[in-house]
Image 1 (cartoon, rainbow, N blue to C red):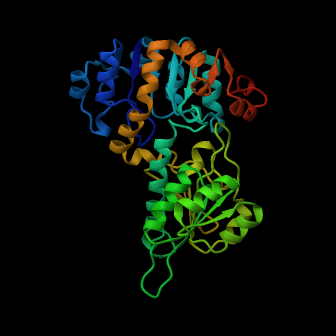
Image 2 (cartoon, rainbow, N blue to C red):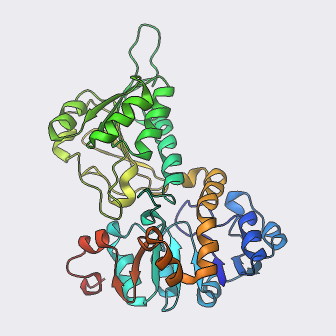
Length: 368
């Protein structure tokens, strides 16, 4: 199979979809890997490392898009890349289509097959290709909260762990999944007073055992969200409904109950965000203020640590790339229902149920 790796052009995205070590494995298995020149520099991988791994270096991304069977990326294509989508191409990347009608429409029009890392499932219904970035984003969220709670960054002037005789910051985590667990772990490690709101009884029991009482875990409902917001210095949005838009748990009206200069870190922004006032930001301009509440909504948080993120992502995706190359898309999908759940768009149609439910009428009719 001919596999392509291009440089990410989303602002402040330094990750790359494949390490030189992963490239060597795929080449050793008989595949041809085309890598755009400079694609790995942001993650610490020079072109020479890819050449040494057996890749073919190409100086024009458009040539790679046109000349491969499978294109692997990190982030979803952005508008300048839409014309490069074409019939017969399999695109394997994070897509987050429920929050991106323009990309959804472009994929549908093109005839390309879009496979989203974030909806691939394993035998237990978990999300193995989303998990490594969720773990990293969760860890980063805890650090970001501590950073933006300081006065120079616009926060309340509170040290996450407090001081002798002074209370620590109160951090509310919305969602007890992978992001929520790792965000709570880091925030608690910094000494913050942490509460997680979660809707699943089974998950609440897991959280109680996992944190052994060091973190409060409460049932999530509209009343508990409102109650907890009023006493929270910072909120981490960690809600996930696979493939679907994130539910809006925090409305604009609720912001008025939060302390002045409180911080919201909406990790769910890739799926539209779980706060009504959230909109995507970038690493260059990560924050904005609404009703005296600081919002941090960077849509590619793990991109801030590309050396770590790229290695973690390749560790997760490489077994799938091998099977795709060996079996082809149809063969792999027939053998592995969890992989088949990753197929979001195919044959000019949205085929993932959660994504399809987001778009009525169908995206090809939305005029974008």
